[in-house]
Image (cartoon, rainbow, N blue to C red; front, side, top):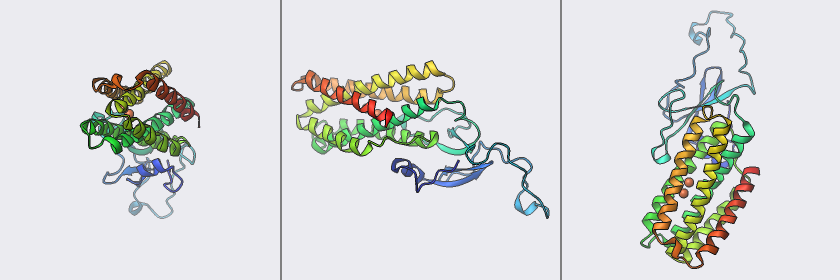
Length: 278
Ligand SMILES: [Fe+2]
Ligand SMILES: [Fe+2]
């Protein structure tokens, strides 16, 4: 796989910025700085090192790994097809080219899932940024910061998944950037309860949305999408926890709570609908 940082989307470029080109196996990929050669990719059979090549030696013809056929595999530090290091959501991916992994996936479904989840986590980050701008120094500042930190981990993971699965981000990111911040800051201007009401509305929508995706992936093939399912389930649990924190901090006592919650959730539905498609 070749991912050119010059043409990658900004979020993708950020991930690539931490990588170095890696030649391994029959293709080329990217590895985290400081990592050594890809541990999962076998060296090509019958290719001696340059110094040991006899005069007139020719590289054997490649079978199926030419341009457009390279594959990306997502490997955990534990080894090929190991489990994700997910505690705190910050486990990192190493990418290297093999012919496995992307083969046989339902591309439209996976594109949609990763694109919308990336957009959602991006928007959640902007909401908490807006809330912190207003309430950062208040008594709920640390609790908002704690939830924001988890959203940063979620976003980081989806940045990595976009590279691994070669999914482009939604074109609406600049809009979610502004809309998320305005929603966060606007709800925080209603007070701590207003901010928590916003958190409850958004997190409930996101955890329901993740549940729908879990159902979709289980219906598709739970074994094939095991790693993605594991990530989404953990993030769903985190969002559920954020929702409960909002309730514990008197979200339901916010002015016009029901109206506010309904309006925000309608916005979330529209955002999900659009981000899946464009
Ligand atoms: Fe999140
Ligand atoms: Fe959340």
